[in-house]
Length: 304
Image (cartoon, rainbow, N blue to C red; front, side):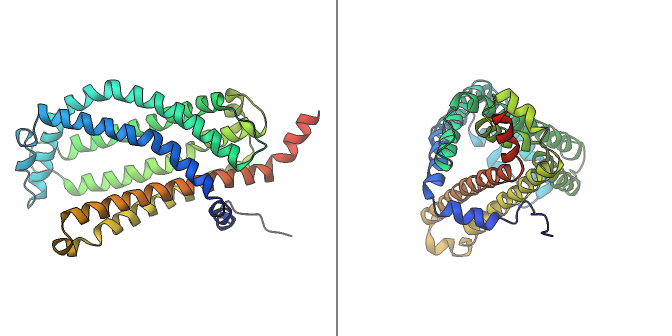
């Protein structure tokens, strides 16, 4: 009897399939950077305006004691409190504008990726945009929960009378970050498989979300597993990018500051490209699992 296929056993095969079709990764990179480059440009412009209104030296940033982490932690909290009103004023209009732009661009871009991956699939950007909006809403709620949790930890361990508890803060920071990372992998899979259900089974956006909760234990287990593994891959890419950017630090005097800036920029670009590549690998894996668990049932329903 053939043992059951684990969710990540075919990962290498999917990576080879995607590598042989670089246009898929190119489309994924193109739509992400089509949004990301203008967004970062707006963020840079707004940051310059904030720094003009409140320079770093006025906010106390230049006075941070880098030799004493306990004192520095309190000083950083004061700098954050000084800049928080300016940042919130910008986020009130920037976040909704950026959210609408990302939903539109990602809905069209993801539709193009699926169409290129499976030419027989219909091109349905409107319901895809709706599903991307639902994904963004869930991601925003998860990030808000993480941020509020970290804010609570900072208030109870840093912004308190007496010496700040950096050890306790660090423990809580790691614990909560890993906890929310795991929670995201456990709850986000319905909105990852929903676009495929919408395209492959010709459903509406709402119907595909509803159906994603009725896939059965076997299919759901594979989705959760591949979601966790791909999240770990992204963490590994972050660590690798940090290593690549930090490795030349001992030679910074010989290389110069400009060369170091290029090295850091190259590490960031590497992370973005690799992350987009593995996102396409994830999508290909989801399609294969749909074929394994749902293709026959979907065909019977369409015939009847």
